[in-house]
Length: 292
Image 1 (cartoon, rainbow, N blue to C red):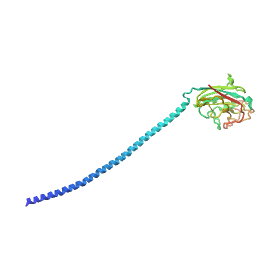
Image 2: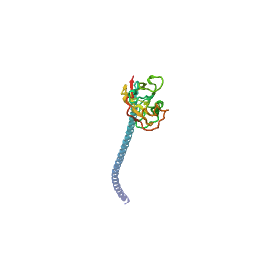
Image 3: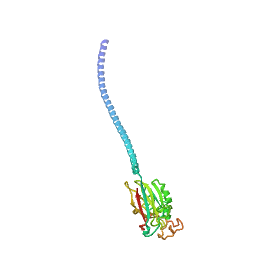
Image 4: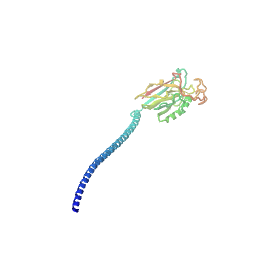
């Protein structure tokens, strides 16, 4: 009986085993579905990571491109600076300086008022408004002494120290004489200098029958070259009469504080006005320049 029961139990156990096996198979099938979803999730994660990596890579590329572009831009700026420097240098490089001779002649014997001219100053420069600025007061660099008393020394020294001035000097000896002095009607001053394209000439000489008037070009100076062609000929039209504004004006040729009649230098009343052009007295001066 026991053996029969045991045999039945074995059959039951076998059947239970089959059922459990089926259950395990079904469970295994479900696990298989889960396992398939897991790789899908992993694939999605990998895809997301790939997108992030792609974003990072693109960002890195953008940053690197930006850095390169910035470097290129900086190089371009440097090249522009170098180019500007090269342009400035090209104005003088390869050019043999040209020698110029300027003659300032007193022709006032045929003008409305005969007047001496006093020793003057000249500079060769590259910047504008080096000698003076039209419409502004004198800078106190020596122009007052030239315009009031015919003394160019202070102006020559102060302007000669500027980096934009290549040549500064005085013309003081009329008609090549050995001694400084006034150029009377019919006599002249002469001076020589060297310059290259890009240079300008400024000069100043006192209108002696005045308190503080002087002859000079416009504040920009006179361009010494047209491209590479040096200036040559009569340049009187580029020279004007100016009031320095440093001393109160008296009637030209009559004032007690004008050089021919004053007791000493700097005796007139100070004015402190702006430098302005003076109308009148044409034909007092002739200025010519010769190149070579």
